[in-house]
Length: 107
Image (cartoon, rainbow, N blue to C red; front, side, top):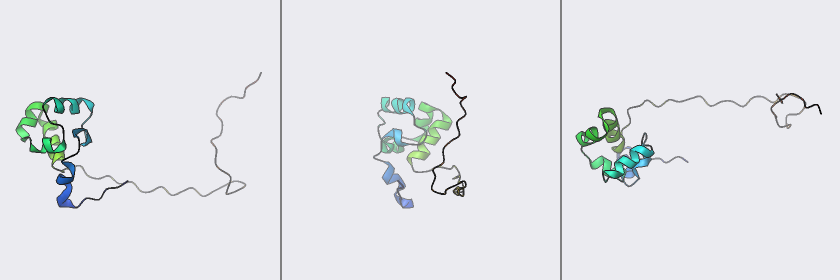
């Protein structure tokens, strides 16, 4: 599912979400954020960047601050959509199955 958010509404949309919804926030970071009373993205957004840097280090503190404000400087990487392969073999309706790589059983 894709959610479309107008550019000016990103931060407002993010604010009520739990801290774990932010990119890069795993269970350990989420737990540490909750220890400091930061439960929502809005709580992080309202925390001064120097405080986040003191708690999480320079890179992580800046990233938390930026992401909580709806900012992500990473370049979006796109990949071309793969085209389906043309059917081959005796019938175009025959489903493809992976050939067996197992040695035949001999009992």
